[in-house]
Length: 204
Ligand code: GAR
Image (tube, rainbow, N blue to C red; front, side, top):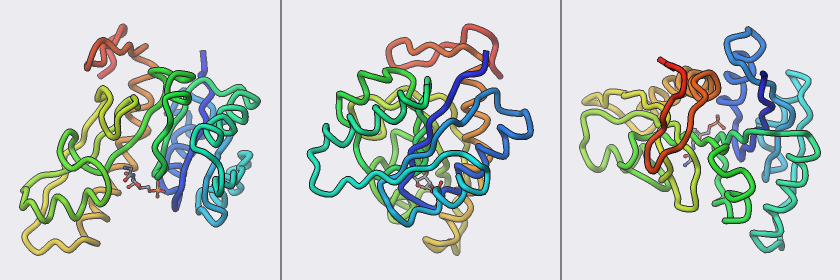
């Protein structure tokens, strides 16, 4: 069975590009049905067009958060989406959205959670002086950058790293990590048990 995916992004959409490349090469057993964004000029819309996937900008201005999320869900449902993949979506989903797609919303965060949740994970890692940081793919729950962890990939912090050089290294790791984590989640028939992900079929 090939699950249908809906991608939501606020940004450049580079993770989307690598997910679509993984899908088209046959690596990823999923089918991206729609790309939604809250930014009119999101790179994700251009990438969706490049790959021939429907892309839609939904304007959040002046709307209460839940009303906006209901709009997102309506478009996802109309496209037949079974699993939601967030790639740099900078809004916090309301409980309404999380309930609707419970345990079927994935997010990528540019740090080894639970370290450096929230904004500017790169700056937080540099300020803290850690020697390793990385990227985490996790299930989205009602709390920010908090749900059960599917996959993590460590990335070293180098002595002369700037914000930009660290960000670039972590983002390169993300392009491998996200397709791999989605594949593990789907093929491993992952279930959420408390804070943990349990794979019904050996996934690694
Ligand atoms: C990624 O680095 C992702 O980890 C980050 O936004 C970027 C999106 O890049 N997400 C967060 O910080 C969420 N807390 P992209 O638009 O090129 O995929």
